Length: 73
Image (cartoon, rainbow, N blue to C red; front, side, top):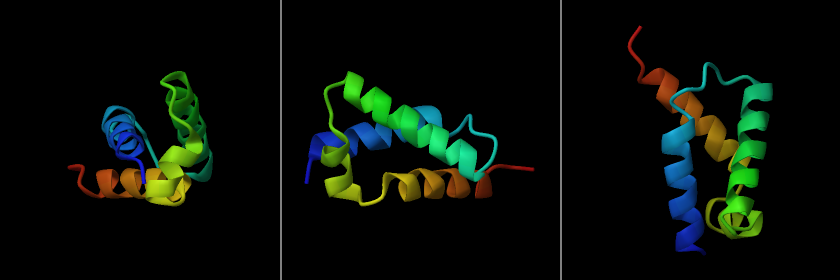
């Protein structure tokens, strides 16, 4: 497991998920691809993140769903 990968993922989600409008398949896939590109730019491999979290797609989806559930209407 990579602490660096987990820390990157948590910080990335905090910076990118709150602005996400909905949890549709396209937005989750686009966010996942952006996360991978941002991680690569920081020298962090996808494997390094996925070893610690499993499916990054599912982590991003959960973050969107739980963020939306907590948003006031």
